[in-house]
Length: 263
Image (cartoon, one colour):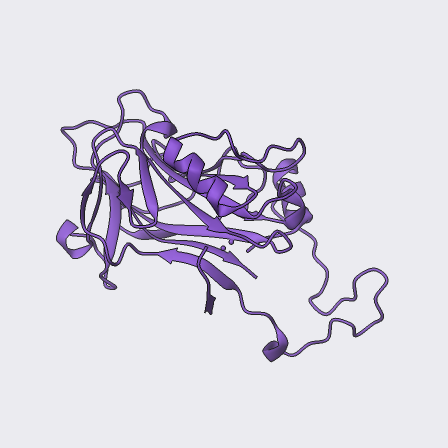
């Protein structure tokens, strides 16, 4: 897998139509089918000819540890909001069932008024507007229950900018004034994962690749035509929420392996 600083992978328009219509099946052409106007065999390519996905970033918070207050930088991220604080710790120190080890991100507590704005980290990355963009992450629900409820939620909210400097200016100012806004594009979409709907299990890692609520499509992917015109950078805002948070309970959400790729 190639790696470059700053990128996401994507489905086509058929997936968005499937989500909107509430269907589960999407008809797709065979991988070797010719596109309209192409001669048969035009897409015949060996596996070695295929372009490998390029990773903009995969963040496991490997070089970080400790508490990060609102307004502080957390590696390449900025803690924009936190009811208490954001923290990075070793998975083993948190008693997580995780054979891989490594670091995890979590928020110490959540607002008594459930809102996604209150526990979030943001970062910027350059993108190629001619390529689709995909994102995913791993989440661990540390709950003392037989199942994970929909009270536990994660949201990703991407915004787009002409360049990374404009994006970083807005992050520092906790503003969206400089983002690109274009009617018909996906310039400010919310991709929500409610853990019960996503079939996450308690005390186990779960990789989120599809949204369960609010999003314009199921798979967490952007086609190039979904970007606002002139997009050269993405602001990736990751937000966590617990609608039944109580300081007397020990349940907590942990995150790792936050990934953006472009094929």
